[in-house]
Length: 148
Image (cartoon, rainbow, N blue to C red):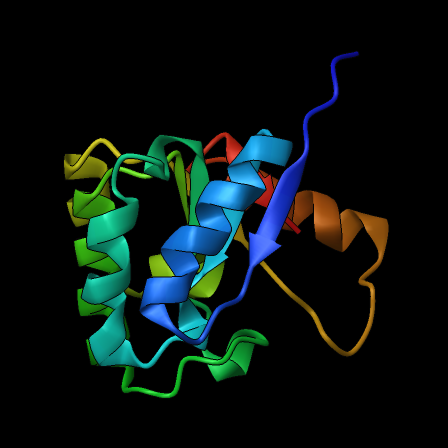
């Protein structure tokens, strides 16, 4: 089995993010960019200088309800997710609940040809195996890339 590494970057400053990403990709195969650590209006400012590196990145804009830091509205978050998808990162991590509730977002992201990493979190417990298997089956209908 071949192993690959993925560094996670959670930077609050959009200018520093590009510098840290460049360093991380020298030592790691991929990087997850936690864009939810930025202020919403700084996400475009962070994407532009990193666009040539995004083919090796998983972009995440996680809301607080899913353990993230994004503090804007859900409508604003979906709008930013669309923008991120237009930059065509290696993967864009979007929560299963968001995709299930907002089919238009799913269609939009698919239209950009950006691959989706469907994620699902339970912060209270680890569900029983049959529950996880059922969730996995539902998630793989959206993407072959899933994270539980």
